[in-house]
Length: 200
Image (cartoon, rainbow, N blue to C red; front, side, top):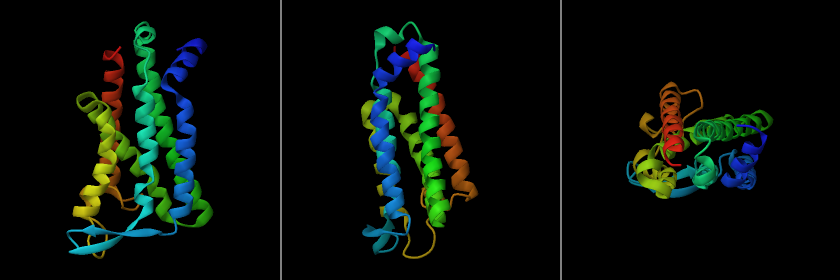
């Protein structure tokens, strides 16, 4: 995709919206990395458990990414299908890379290792949402907060780490959540590339 193509693609996707979304993500990670939490109901705990606000920080980034991808110029994109698919895929990778960089930077500056996992959580939730976009359309974005609430209500014990199926809420180096994230994100990128080719 050449210079003019990049310009119309960026305008069509309304990439400017990612700036406030990533700024909000940075602010939320910075403010909540120290362990700020809210009490929410958890069935495994048979009561309320403190849920770190850090768990919810990927939601605005994932929601804005999907909103940008849903903004299209079908007539213009029809003549550059492959380039559009590559650009959309690169955008998803770049957004998750920035989120990972923000988490790592906050962790480095604050000494809080919890912030590092926000990048992995962002990639995992983005992967789920991207996989669901073709059948669910714009409603797929609800999968990110829905997954988090399932984790809170059914996955958080009163003490100790959550079960591995939750993926989110674990340390960044935990092998099973990291593997699940890689699989979900790669699957999401594959679906995104195919849907970008076939929806114009």
